[in-house]
Amino acid sequence: MDCSTVSTQENRLETLRSWDADWSGLRVVVTGISKTGFSVADTLAELGARVVVVAASDDDEARAHADTLRIVGVADVILGAGTSTVLPLVDGEQAELVVTSPGFRPSHPLLAAAAEAGIPIWGDVELAWRVQTKSGRKTAQWITITGTNGKTTTTTMVESMLQGAGLRAIAAGNIGTPILDAVRDPEGYDVLAVELSTFQLHWSESLEPVSSVCLNLAEDHVDWHGSFAAYAADKAKIYENTQVACIYNAEQIETERMVEEADVKEGCRAVGFTTGIPAVSMVGVVEGMLVDRAFIHERKDSAAELAKVSDIGDLVPRHLVANAAAAAALVLAYGLSPADVQKGLVNYHNGEHRIQPVASADGVLWINDSKATNPHAAAASLAAFNPVIWIAGGLSKGVDYDELVKAQAARLKAVVLIGVDSSTLAASLARHAPKVPVIAASGVHTGNKADPQAAANPTLSDGDAIMARAVAEAASLAVDGDTVLMAPASASMDQFSSYAHRGQAFMDAVRKLMESRASADKES
Image 1 (tube, rainbow, N blue to C red):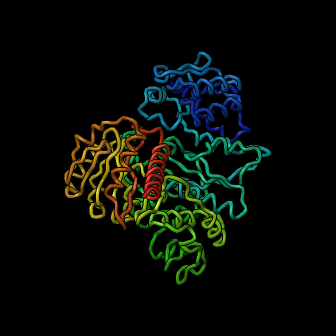
Image 2 (image 1 turned 180 degrees about the vertical axis):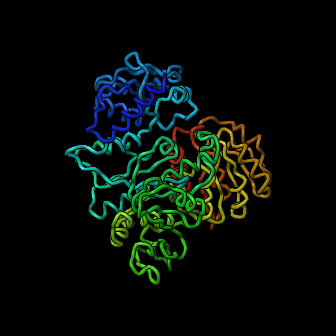
Image 3 (image 1 turned 60 degrees about the horizontal axis):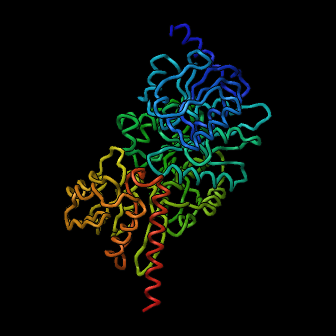
């Protein structure tokens, strides 16, 4: 492709800044056909673009989606593992744009071919921002949230606060509702609470949120980004073009540096959040109260009470307080009142699989934190309990466990390993917690020294059965005062369909254990 053709394409794309712009005939390749890919293709077809969808999947769901997309006007849908690696033509010509789903890495052959040809690549979030403005439809303001951990919790807290204030608001993006479905809602929303993964941020460039936050930063998804530096750089994009306030974690200097280096709108403020006593221009905690020293006129020598920490719930670990402080700062920047913050927290339901109490019996607390899919998330869980019988392991995503184990070793009474290959975690335990008993869920007891080989070769392949065994092993060790915490510090896809499946397997196993004990007590 010559330079003049590339320039013409870029000029046309620059004009596409609303639903009412001229999208007709635009040649687009869409990657993926799950929720994100389907919503992208459906939107572009409605806009009049010429769309070809490529996807590696070729199951019943993919074929059903393909049939629907062809009915609504998508030019072609190409399914199958081999086909998704080749950049197809659209109406016999090269595409003018690729819109990719988050699962496709930048190094994917199709995306690499597009980049080599000079074809712009967007994500679904970039497309959503560009099409949200439409005559006769309300245009929502955006509040954007990212971070290694806590994104979903903070996003749903923001949603609860906005709805408590009487606004039409919804959590969207990397959570539940695809962002394009939210912006196409016929009635429109006042505000969108948008959770963004680094995958989505990587392909975004035009967003202008009212307020934004990077909650925290720790090693994760190195396999997708190629390096921790690249991962951090994509996280930092959350702050670009923010209008009113960039919210940063005062307890993690990296997020403050992101704000300092961001290109924001004139007048945008930097506001910190903390689980301790807040300095000026921060939201924090004083004597069990969430307080504001950022959005009040007298912030130099006073603070405004927002809510009691206990308004969040009975079990409020430190990281959940941090999420609430961040959410409060985000909505205060939008213009909500302290009463709105409190109402939102009182009405908030933390949902399943994130530090979720499952049972309490004989003085033992059972906690499901299947959403702890990386070491940073698991550390937050472990820090909330002591002593802990820790159920952990799974698909590691190339991360290192040494820092996690070193920091939390003193809390560990025992570790029960799940996962097809938990050898990396087992090796870290052997190095940094050699006195902690480690047990493979296959039933192989390794005594006081972790055995990476045993952990790497469980005798059972079924995830539910492995989890049942893990719960039984934990129960045999737990006594009054202990917490059994299932916080895997790993992804779930080696043995389960999702973290939710893994969490449900844990809850089912605990429930069966409790029922078995109750039945035994009756018989005795």
